[in-house]
Length: 408
Image 1 (tube, rainbow, N blue to C red):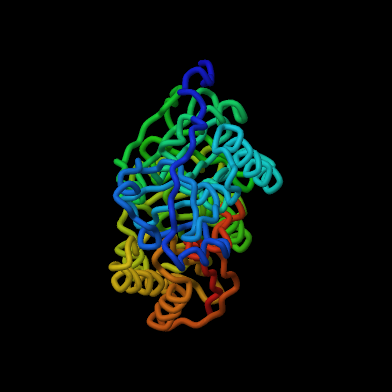
Image 2 (image 1 turned 90 degrees about the vertical axis):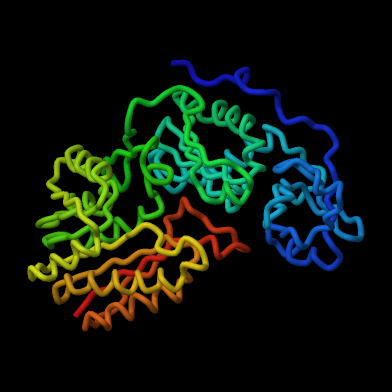
């Protein structure tokens, strides 16, 4: 099937003069210091400004008229301005997008020998609101802002020119962020076709990702380094991988020489992906369909013990209002998991909740250990792998938190 061509897309972004957006007096300091966002209450929101199209390009100036750069603007979003360039004369066209993509690609090619990684991680790669995961010649794309949605035709042309995907660029736009931007959730293939899960490689192991019906972009590359760390302590030990999804921790532990691996998830579809990965790597993984807390309680009641227990759940804290209940969830999760770890064994706990502060997560896991009557030591405290860089002025975007304990 032929790849996309530039003719399949509308012409390059028009070079018409951009509308001017003025920051309110006294509200340019943070932007000047390096922050890439401007909030709606920091803008002179005139009637004309309110009528600007969501996601359109604007020339940003301060109250004194100094030009500060080029950005996308959404008058209906709390984060109204997302800076693309601090060069006021910059033209946001396909050449600009290609330069940003090329820089991100060069970094990933330096980090990883094979084309399986997060290629674009939003603001940290200079393309706010855009997430792209690469699965060889297939791209999974999230456009999470109105600005990136408007730039999509040109982005597709740039992907085609630089990466030549096999006529497939898959949009996986189920992020809640789209709702805040006034965009509808959607999930579609925009070019070419795929006929099922796609294969990927991670840490020398083979896996399958479901880009059409799986979670998020189909695979969680952010846990790459943490999976390798768990695998290193798994040899000769029984391993329990709770919330396994597609078997990332379980299969790598089995390959590393675990004596037995049990993978737990409530989704039959996810367990099928994990079983397929075990088959591809010629290792044995026992899959169990169950609700995670209930299964951990059942195993504890049966007196089961493991050398390694992994608990890597979906987000317990989806918004700030969920913080109290979510914190209790992480505490209970840790208590149940710790009860299953043999003396001298290892417990790996993770949280992908953006709204769960790293200090609070550490505190709740420590409380969970105390409630389980266990003590030990933290041997690893980590976040996402290097293909998920963090913008220096957006430390809150470092959403992934992971702790590995050795328990007494």
